[in-house]
Amino acid sequence: MGASITMAVGAAESGLSPAVAVIGDSTFTHSGMTGLLDAVVKKVAITVFILDNATVGMTGGQHSAALGRIEAICKGLGVEEEHIRVVKPLRRLHDENLAIYKEEIAYQGVSVIIPRRECVQTLARRMKLKAIEKRKQKAVSN
Image 1 (cartoon, rainbow, N blue to C red):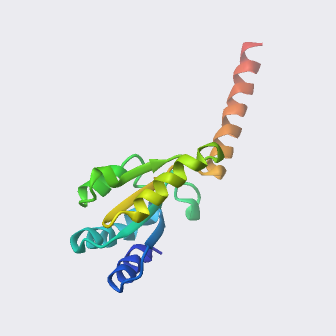
Image 2 (cartoon, helix red, strand yellow):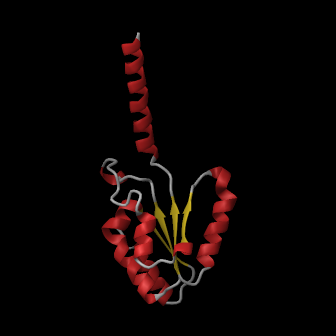
Image 3 (cartoon, helix red, strand yellow):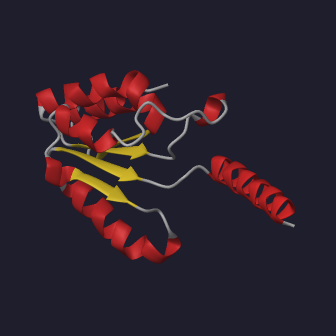
């Protein structure tokens, strides 16, 4: 639960390269921000993937405290803006995303990559509710 960034900092300080951390958006706000700040202060070469699915998946799909704020939080913690990259993880964008991953992993500082895509469970729930509402509106208009 949130140790990936501090583990990557330790790996980088021990000379392991590349050092990569993966953390979810809500876990990032609960326990990952301090690790990212530590990485910035120590100026270690790590790449952090913050997986933004806009929800707290493990507890039922509430909105993440990071919703719409991840980039600003990272910038506020001192990550250079040009090394905060948002990608859309879609098959058709694979080559473009891969180029970004390679570029940021090669960077000798702190970089953050934010793959952003709605959680498939909350998307399905939202689409189901939308279909129900549409049927209700159609029934009322008939």
